Amino acid sequence: MIVKHLEDIIGTEHDVDTKTWRSYRLLLKKDGMGFSFNHTIIKAGTETYIWYKNHLEAVYCSQGEGEIEVIESGDIYPIRTGTLYALNGHEKHFLRATSDMHMMCVFTPPLTGREVHGLDGSYPLE
Image 1: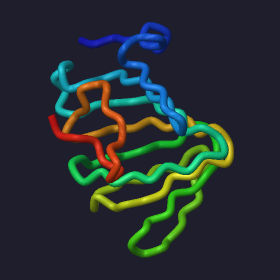
Image 2: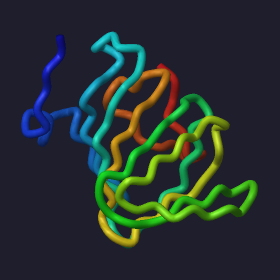
Image 3: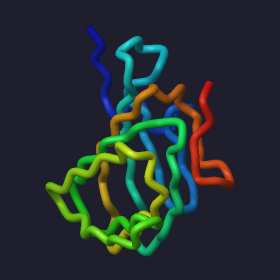
Image 4: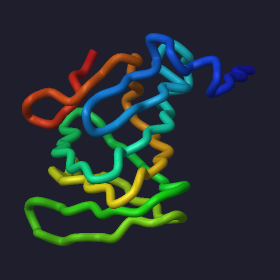
């Protein structure tokens, strides 16, 4: 069994802070679950370009508001508390936060813990 507490992640190598988001990496590849789980805060007033060409991601918003824009189609979907979206087609997108958005994120293949978006918007494969 794995039990972790957010306060034990804050300030460690698994607390990844960037200009537009901060991610607490709770479950990682080394935990052997076949997926990873993050609590990520998308910072208010920011826009992040993302393209998970190497990963599938499901996201649940537990707090906050914003939107996701799918670049290829131009579709824009509002995000608010209780919204789930899944990037099952490796969609290139913009993620915009009106207020701080607390996002619960599941990745497959799992993250190792220190990933940040490359210039193309993706996380590298290990």
